[in-house]
Length: 108
Figure 1 (spheres, rainbow, N blue to C red):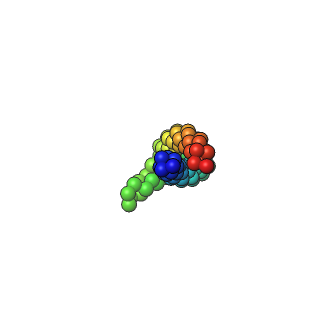
Figure 2 (figure 1 turned 90 degrees about the horizontal axis):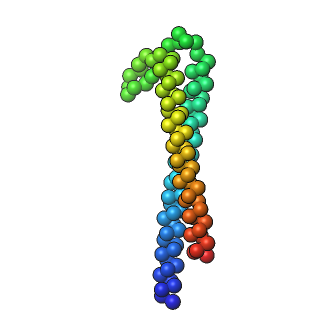
Figure 3 (figure 1 turned 90 degrees about the vertical axis):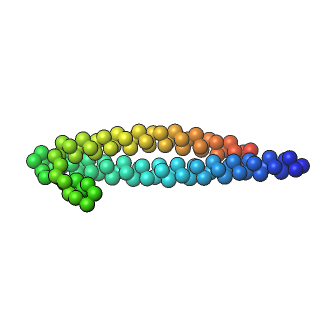
C-alpha cells in the first residue's frame, strides 16, 4: 500500500511539473502571437509609406535615421524569426499537451 501511495505521489509530482511547463510554454505562445501581430502591423504601416519617407529607429535612447528598405528588411527578418519560434513553441505545446493528458489519466 505504501508503494502505491508513493507511486501516486510521484505521478502527481510529474503531472504538476508538466503542467507548470505547459503554462510557461502557453505564456510564450501568447507573447509570440502578440509580437507577430505587432510586427505585421508595422509591416503594413511601412508598406503605406513613400520610398523617400524619413524613418527613425530607436537604438538605446537615440533615434537613428533608417532607410525604408532597411526598415522593411528588419521587420521581415523579425517576422521570419517569430514565425519559426511560433512553430517550435507549437510543437512543444502539443507534446506537453499530450503528456499532460497521459499523466492526468495515470493520476486518476
